Length: 209
Image 1 (cartoon, rainbow, N blue to C red):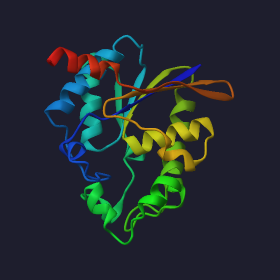
Image 2: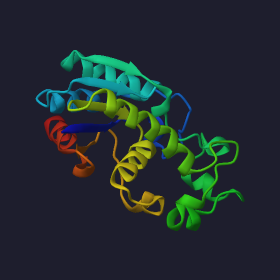
Image 3: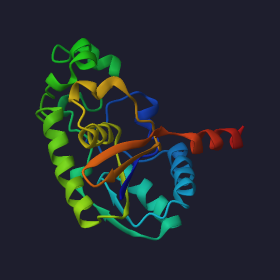
Image 4: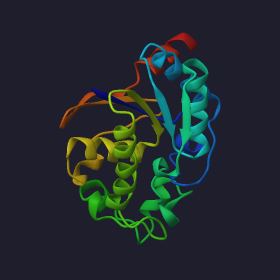
């Protein structure tokens, strides 16, 4: 049995501003650092064997904070980078809605048909490059617990790819900052054990208040 632990990076200022980040190399804010420390504590008892991270700072810093607890091999790879949204990057979602090359209804109902102006061709292209890498590390670490620290869009695409669910379901679930999702692979099948678990963050909020 191989287990994938999928963690989204901690919060950035652009997350708070509802601004499209994509490949823009934003950094964790103070809340994001606390979130990363909280998910590190959550993972401390999970017997993680190896950690893979997106090359972008917000994900890699999250992975580094986690690894202070785990002390495992940490590998940075661009295949786990967020979707390249091209000209939409840096815009708030309200600003995106005003652009002629952005259709909110199409993105909401038919995300698999959306193209990103000046960015990646489609969600299928993003999923293909992420899944190629994920399948390689599953084969390399067969029978192990693998932690992947990445981004909301890429984590959703990995989950859909592992479960064989079509890309039209992309916007039917949400991946929060510093959330944990778990996919278990047994022989020729994969199943979702945990989706968007944020209990460790709720405990953090309770402790602060």
